[in-house]
Every structure is written in structure tokens, then in C-alpha cells.
Image (cartoon, rainbow, N blue to C red; front, side):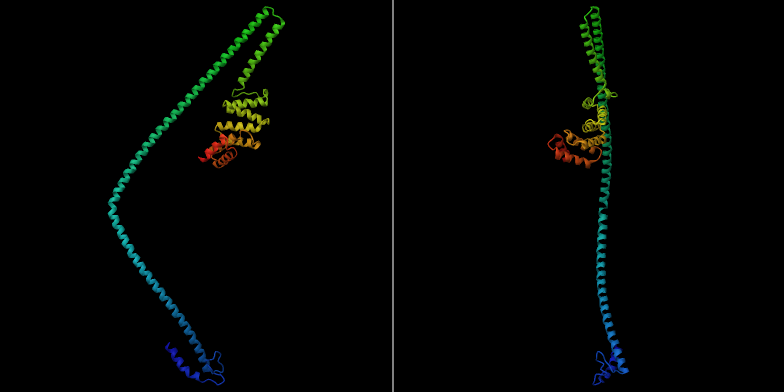
Length: 345
């Protein structure tokens, strides 16, 4: 800076030698008519101005750095204070830990004793639960065996009744045969003979009809060729009513192949599978029934059992749809009220 000041002083007399026409005027923005020395002065002046500008910039940066240093010092001081505070807190925590060490040991002992007690109680409950389950299973088996025994007795009774009826029929046939022999021996008239033969034939047809009626309810036999579709349908409904669901399914499936009342046939098949706990098959036939005719009188039952079946096989979302449809369209029916109850639960 001192050198720059001396240079300015050394060249200042030269600025006084200015031409009366402006030539050599160094203070002009665009000087002209300058000597070599004056040109050098102009260049030095510009250099001085540039140096002055750079100096101001440096001063500004220095001031900025000073501000930064001041902020950093404050941050360091804050960090130092926080460090002291943290050390004090750590010291306090260490004192607390030392004071609570004995309490912690006591609590640990209590917790251990509680865990041991809980484990003993759980083990005892498991043993009691296992015993209760075994008792319930044993009781269930006893009930099942009792029902099976009762069913066997009932079947045996039916067989005895059939044998008794068959013997009675045989005795009646034998009596009729003796009566015929007696009539023949007494030389009855042709008219009387025709009457006796007619009565015998009618009785024989009745007996045969009873045997056919009993035989068609057997599990492995049904002669479709001897029955019309309405009769087969009637027998299927009777099978369903007697809880012979497999036999009912067989009859209704035959009717479907004959295109006889397929909507109702599928409904009864679905109901049979429903009561056999085969819910997937039940849902299939319910849907087949609705796709054929959706205005049947059994629609409330079909919708309710469809919803329950779907819930049984884990499709709760679609089950909710069936419940809502049943509640909306058949809300006044017992099935609709049942659906509302199930939805609320």
C-alpha cells in the first residue's frame, strides 16, 4: 500500500500539464494525445483501481471468515457446555445405578419366582386341559357307540318285522291255497272260482308291490326303467326327507340327465351335500340351480345354505355377498332374519 501511495505522488505533477484542447487530459474517461509517460500513468491508474477492487473483495472475504470463526467458536463453546452437562448426567445415572443395584437384584429374584410359579400353573392347566379333552373324547365315543347300538337294534327290529310280515304273507297264501283246494273239492261254480282267483291275483299284486316298494329304498338298488320321472322325483324327495342323502342324490342326478325339473333337482342335490358336510359340492349345485331359475320358492333356503357353505370352505367374502342379498330381497323370511343375525355377529 505504501508503494502504491508513493507512485501516485510521483505522477501527480504530470496531471497538471493538460492541453488547452483536452489533449493529455488524464482525468478524461477517454484521454488522447498522451505521451508514453502519460500512457504508462493511465495504465498504472487502471492497475491501481483493479488492485483497490481486489483489496475490497479480500477485505469482505476476511470479514466473512471472521464471522464464520466467531460462529464456530460459539458452537465449540456450546458443545463444551453440552459435554459437561452430559458428563454430569452420566455421573448421576451411574450413582442411580449403584443405588438401584440392590433393588434390581431383588426385582430379578421376584421375577424369577413369578416365572417359575407361572410355568407351574401353565403345566398344571395343560394337564387339566388334556384330561378334560380325553374325558370329552371318551364321552363322545360312548355317545356314538350308543347311537350305533340303538341304530343296530332298530335295524334288527325292522328285519324282524319284515320276517314276521313275510311269514304272515306266507301263511295267508297258504290259507288261500287251502281255501282254493276246499272250493275245488266242493265243486264251486266258475263264477265263484273266478272271484277267488281275482282276489288272489289282487292280493298277489299288493304283496309284490309292497316288496318292490321296500326294495327300491335299499341303498344299492333302484330300477329307473320301472318308474316315471314324476315317481322318481317323488321318491327322491322321500329319500331326502328320510335323510338318505346319497340315495336322493342318485335319483336327482338321474332326473337331471332326463331334463326333468333341473333347477329343483340341483337344489335337492345341493341340500343333500350340505347335510353331508360336503360344502364345495353343495355350492356348485346351488349355483347350477340359480343359473337355471332364480324365482323358486326355496330361494331363501338356497341363499342361506350357500352363504354358510362358502363360510365353511373359507370364502367369507363371497359368503357376505349371499348374506346381503338374502337380507335385502328376503328380509321378512326366517332365512332373511337369520342372515341379519349372522351379519351382525
